Image (cartoon, rainbow over all chains, first blue to last red; front, side, top):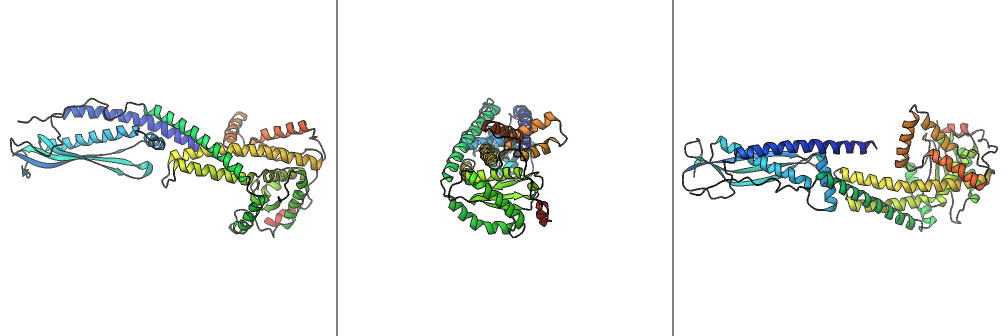
Length: 153
Length: 302
């Protein structure tokens, strides 16, 4: 009976605290996405040929942990199948945050574009301690002369 | 010149708008209902089929298991010790045997254990174990006879093999559903817990049935049922005198009833009174004293 009570408390804590932290994270993401919208992150491998650019590898990564409620619901959904709804927001936040961090790294190089942008995802930990790492990386293009020690395209 | 820009997409494209809380409640309810149905069906099926296993197979199995279990100290103490107590218990068994609906190939074997737990149990092959912790607080032979008859009734009803068959069948079904996890999964544990709780309701039914058959044998043996409810009165008294308030104790015991394999002691005392009155068995009568040397016999454990 005590175990059931602990599980219920953990579920309630995971649900309310996880929901609050997710909401705050999304608010922060939306604000920063608007701020960094002037720096395009492009999937294409073909950079513009109108000018000379210096190129740098830039990356941004984040490790996001699932809360107790999400992990529990994820396990429950696995019994029946279907979209694992609780992990959708987790991965969405991870991808957007990693992209924002990559853009922040590119801005430090005074980049005008980031080309060849890719994502990598890795799970870290086992069982209930599992987290997901999302890495976004690409080639930042900065106008010639803005940064030292970079390769010219 | 090519123009590059990142247009901000509308929110919610990659995230379902369904409420996680609602999905959780719906799936949990469905999972619990499915597990309960699954356990009920497999337990009934497994225990019903297990009862068709001839009693002699139970005996053969226990003959093979007895020595390893004794060596491991799991089941029984050394039968060469405490011979007097064992013989006395066996004589009670022999007296009660004709008073129960025993089938021809069935036989019973009483065992005494030096364990101090307040417990007695019947297992496969008609083997029954009575702990010193239980015998030392019994005030009369009538009370011991009720415990003995109760355990014999379990054997007569084939409860040990039915419990084993039902338990194995439901465990196999639950494992199929929840999977064999090397990692501990709370969902699996919770569903297995739900299954275990469901299965315990079957145990409680078996206990009531064994009480009824045991009481009938005791009434036939002594001509009354005085002292038959002593086991449950002792258990109930021990629970009431633990310093908690009546309301707290009652709530706790209702919760324990839900999660226990045995019915509440008060319910069993009431059932004994009802049965006695229904069958015209007197609840007053002369109690038969315990053997004079019982405490001395049991002191061989020390």
